[in-house]
Image (cartoon, rainbow, N blue to C red; front, side, top):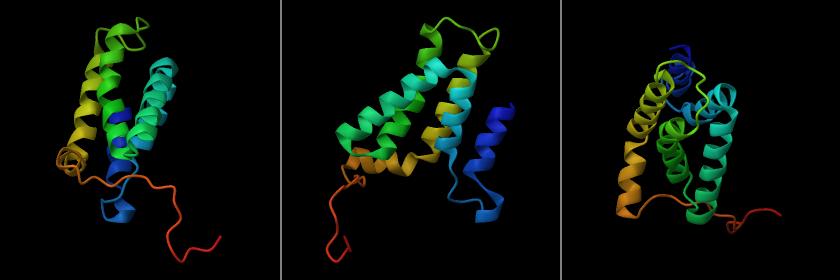
Length: 124
C-alpha cells in the first residue's frame, strides 16, 4: 500500500498542480528495491524496446505489463499469498491508465519518437 501511495504521489505531485509526475521512474525505483531481479529484467526489456522503436512510452508501458507476468515465473516471493502479483496488476493498470493517450497515439502511429539528430540552429 505504501508503494502504491508513493507512485500516486509522484504521478500527481501537489507542487505541480497534480500534473507532470514521475510515476514510471518511481515505479522502477520501488521495483528495484522490492525485487531486483524482476526490476532489472523490466529495465533491460524497456530500454531494449525503446532502442528498437525509439518510443519511450511503449517501453514503459510494456515493462509495466511484463512486471506482473514475471511475478508468476520468478519463484522468490517477496510478499506472501500472491500479494506481489496483485501489486503488479494494480501498478500495470495504473500505468496503462495514465498513459492512455500515448497508447492511442501508438495505435494510430503518431507517437513521438526519440531523435538523436541535432535540430537546425542548435549549437555544437
